[in-house]
Each structure stands twice: as structure tokens, then as C-alpha cells.
Length: 205
Image 1 (cartoon, rainbow, N blue to C red):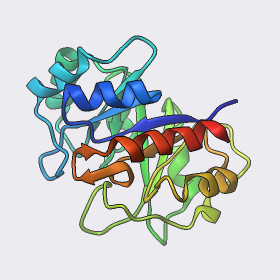
Image 2 (cartoon, one colour):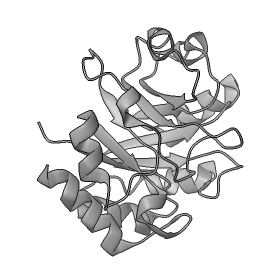
Image 3 (tube, rainbow, N blue to C red):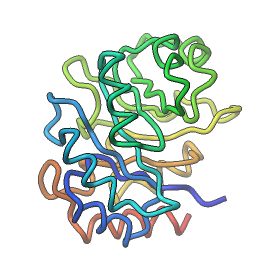
């Protein structure tokens, strides 16, 4: 089965159309003020309107309040919420809404214990650990830490580029790869040639 591609950090309708034309399977909109790729709810709604049927719309949130999560669900109408902060399984489940749980791979993490807390997630996303940032750092982690035998859909993130994505797929066999900075010319501005090359290489695997 072909590996899917999620392009995260989409900041405009034009970027959304570019990614879809290049073959993206999912688009990520970041609603988190500390991110250089942050969009507000109004811009997220505008981008959402350009996302075609069959392409997933994912809104990334970091340690948002329950009221804000509910506001995003009702106004943006994404297909999934990506919880990328310190949210507990109980917090994620309360909305009865499909979600991606991002697991940040700090050195002392008990992966199986962490996974067990989010058994109802639609996807589990694995990203690099950074003490000062919640994703979007361009850093990668040791892919060998991920189990090859698993019973959940896996998204691989963290420092992926057109140059290393084939190696990553061969090492991890993910169901989806997630890229942001690796296909940009500056934060929030995707580079068309990098974007197309990344997706082309993923689909060739």
C-alpha cells in the first residue's frame, strides 16, 4: 500500500492548492501562536474551503483549552485534530472526535506505555523531541527506536526532506510521512520544487 503524505504548516489557500496539486493526501494547519507557521481560526476556515474531498484536513493544536478545541472543531470543521502538546488520553478522548496523537521521542520515553494511553487515536505520529519547541524544528530522531511490528497506523515526522525520505520509509515502513520545514524556502512558505520532489519520492517507494 502506498505511503501517504501530509504537508504540515500550510499558511494560505495558495499553499493548500499547491500541495494538493502535487499529490498531498493530508494538509496540516497549525493553530498555535508560538509557531512560525501559525494561522488564526479565520485563516484556517479560508484554507479549509480550498481542501478537496479525499484530502484530509488536520488542525494541529498544542495544549489548547477544551473550549478552544471545541471551537476549532465547530468552526474549521477539520477531519482530524492533531494534539501535539502534553495532552492526556482522557483530554483527547473527551471530544469524541477523530484525532492524531503526536508522540515526541524524548530519550527516556517508554514508547509502549505512551502508546497505550492513546489506543483510540486514529493515527499515532512520532516526532523529534525538543525541550523548547513542540514540533516544526527540522530535527530528526533515531528511527530505529520505533517498533516494526505494530497494530496502529504510524505517521513519521521530524526532519524529513526530499533527500532522506526514501531512507526513512525503508527504515520505518510508516503509513504516512509528515513534512513541514523540509519542503520550505522559509517558514510557512512551501517551495514548489521541493514539495513536488518530496511527494514524488514518497509515491515511488
